[in-house]
Image 1: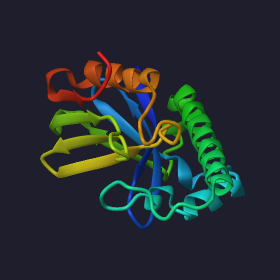
Image 2: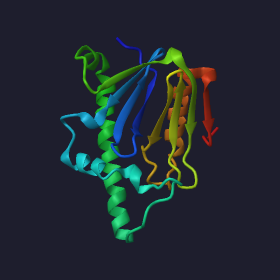
Image 3: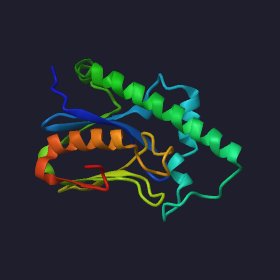
Length: 183
């Protein structure tokens, strides 16, 4: 049985083609499941992702042209539903990880953590999205963290950022740093 230390849900990558990952950490490996490439995703979620929620934020982190209040509330609700669905799929994978690994899924990438030199968890600030940055000899991987950042102007709530921080501290120890996270 795989010993899971913890996970990070709704880790987005990409500017044009968005990928949504559920990251599962053990002491030596990060399992990177692309939850967007699942047959069981609802069409609602697929349509939302095609709209690229990250694209709503420009290079400087500011939102694009704002619509009416009602429009923004519909977008917020869509974001909330999409995040919940991706989290549910990721938690199901996590709960049944050994079964998923035995099936050799196409939506899985494994990352050997021994080559990781630095990991940063950066809370959202000034409408810039929160992110996770993992640096290794092969380069830098950056994930935008979308769990519930729509509720607090691009910030994750204290409970979520603390949960992520706790997992990363256990896995990466002195290689881990956190910016703007609650103490």
